[in-house]
Length: 428
Image: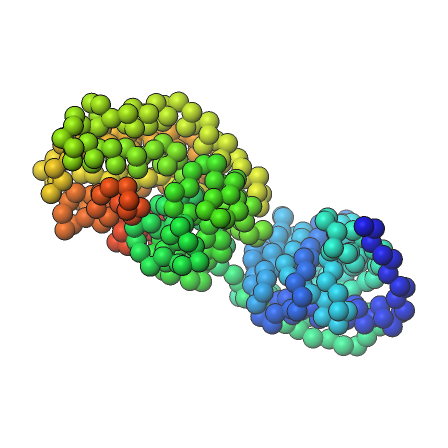
């Protein structure tokens, strides 16, 4: 349906709307929630020749938060080049609209004692269209940004109006999206969020541990990992939830993922090994079909499918987001004398399962590296506390497949993963 034309705004109405815009932008930078959410992006070109550019370090660059949304300030060569904000509402107009500063018609001025002066044309858009459709109203607005490295202050003065007001937003922690399977969801650690249903998302998952240890620096905005997930579930529905990649927050800075273990059928291998022993059959390495299939998959299609999965994540995540690929821990002791009360874990089976874990991690590492991701090796993280080490174990006991927690790190194991991954990423 075509968009109905807007009645012309009088000059007084335009001034009122400019004031509303500035007030909305200011509110967006305070901690006071704007009313009806809308999307807004303000973009500016670098200062043109003849205009003073902001030089040196620009502490404003980065992410800033307010109640209900996020502000992102980017800079290049010491000059602020763009400002983007989510959930800006035009309180006063009674409408939700998209707002942009048009490229080429706005620039940041010089750094002064009070901050950076910004002036540009504001264009109003109808956000019932996707993408937003221009409805043609232009007007001028300006504001000054002060900087102290700790807070972002916006002071606005609408044209033809002496009204002026200033607001602040605080530096925001790194926004994280946690994707993947049970090893990121926290299966085995307990305390599952009822709202996550069969995904078994735990507050003791390693990403959530990092958040608890670094509350001002690390925030899991999108906790999407789901127990049982395979690579196709990153881009498709699973357990009643939409594709994981489509739910990444638009201002996410770090995307973490563990994926590939379920595709390989590692849990089926464990179940086969346990049950064959219970049934007094030849062990799973000698006769177990799941083990042979897993080896074939790891040495065959795994790499190409992982690559496609990483590319799918990059296609949906912000372009400057960091992709962190985490491997899987070794679940069984390297030395047979460490095994306690696990009759099924005979030497041949133990060595084969550990060898399969090494192969799986090697493929994940190589594929992540080829796709420009950061790979975090956690293979030895549970050393001394693997499954079948008796009271020292940090792994949920291996039992028949009816218990989804079997073979997963418990809370202590997830904590160990958090410390290892955090030390690599700088969030220990």
